[in-house]
Length: 199
Image 1 (cartoon, rainbow, N blue to C red):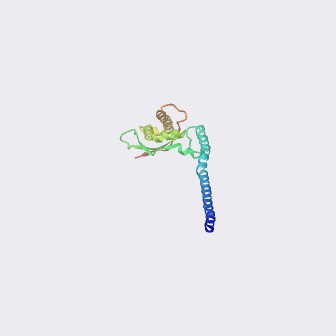
Image 2: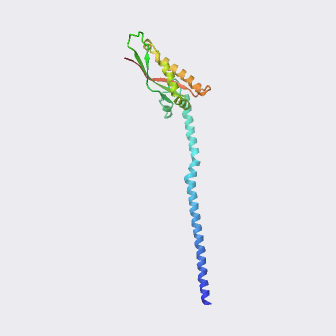
């Protein structure tokens, strides 16, 4: 009988120690779960929640840029001090050539070498022109074609072609839009190259 009491006394602390280990393991796993959850919240959820606030500042900055571009004026918004958005609104076309009409078929022909840039009022106009660039290029080519050699002696010719490019390309842009728009338009046009090359 004495032996069974000793075994029972030894078994009781052993059983108590087992449940203590289980409590410690449960507490440690709970702490690990809480730490993991906090890590997920801090690394994943918090940055996503703060991203819209950061994006709103970016949108306000973009609206200020657009307002500056729209109010920025006249014929040729030449990239000057308009910041980084200005180059994206300038659509440059490839260098092209056109045969000049000579006064006599006996005279060797000349060609007009030209390259054009269009200045857009906003990013929507620029993206529409880029998407339909061949159509605009065809209109620009038409405006430079069938010019007589004598016309190139007039300094006003280059300016007249630039004015016509703005009007005609704006007409195409409005046609693509399907409705009139004061904001989505071409503000100006310039020649990067414009010279006669005699053959």
